[in-house]
Length: 337
Image (cartoon, rainbow, N blue to C red; front, side):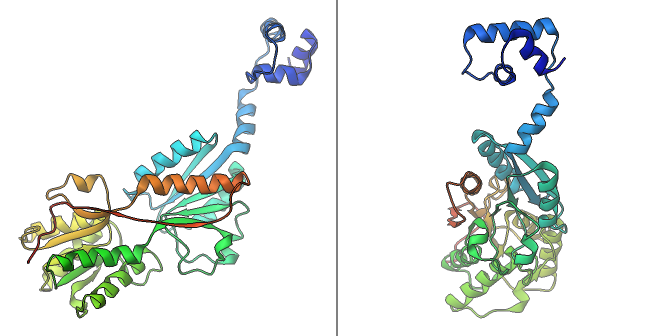
């Protein structure tokens, strides 16, 4: 039994039967009743899997998450999913490890799921025009931009914070509290990514504040994991570096740093103040509460989806938004004045 048989049975067109099956309002009650009765009498069973496949091909939006262990992405993913659903599309979530290539993963996903567009949540900052040719759909970089690449601004969109400026702001906050020996904890100062931008912000702030750069106060942990940050902080303390404050480039690294400082007998903030950037919910419940520059996670997610959907629907063009952080004054920074 096919949909054509149902249409013939009740004397209507195939499209009318389809509208009844999909609960379209433009069918008269009498015709709807006749078609519904015919479906029941003929024993017709709609091919829902096929209908779902068709629907997914026309509404699928890919979200590729690079760095599955990044706790900052959790709230972003939730909001992104809500926004995609609210706008009548379907989210196809794909998570990859930090060492994997998000462009290649998205290219495969685009072909398999017939994506209309892609949001990259975390990724490299140095895409080339040749690399992005793998994708034939629009994409938005959420939480980062192609700072070190050669893409034209009209070739992609981005929604992020000013990473270099926010790192500089964090250092200035410590300086304003009287700190002059300010250490920094980051993954890699030359990674063409967030680490490099926040390293540049740290160096620029020292210069602006009239402080000399001391290589002994810079710890490069080699990774973003809390274990890397804990080990790096222990090494910073172990080599006898003299510092009264520490700027970590992420909340998760700061949490590990506070643990390392405490384990090595240094009280936070009495012996060492700690500040970071991100605004994780978790860091609001640690002891002491972390002082941090909170990224606007909900706004980052909403603006990324709004930008992508407008491009998909032909009502918008590529753009690059820079959002502001908000200082959450915890208890991990003390004034020396």
